[in-house]
Image: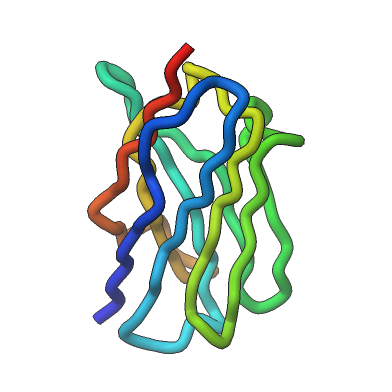
Length: 118
């Protein structure tokens, strides 16, 4: 049973930085893609970034390119989201997610709140 536990959210001023962590457990993740999503109040959940666990290839939504970096630590089974130059529109609950190469996003963490003040 895959379990994902996020941490690292908080309140930060615009222009600041935060690093989110997602501790993954329950199996090996060599055939998984790990991702971050966010949901702002009154809006649908949106994709932010993803990383292929095996080869480290990444993808980002355009709005965070150049500001956010997703990475993984295989030894610690942890995925990170480094967020720099934060903007108020980055505010939301950030969720860690996992899927296999041939499936949809099916495993989710409980979420961590990120609030960026102007």
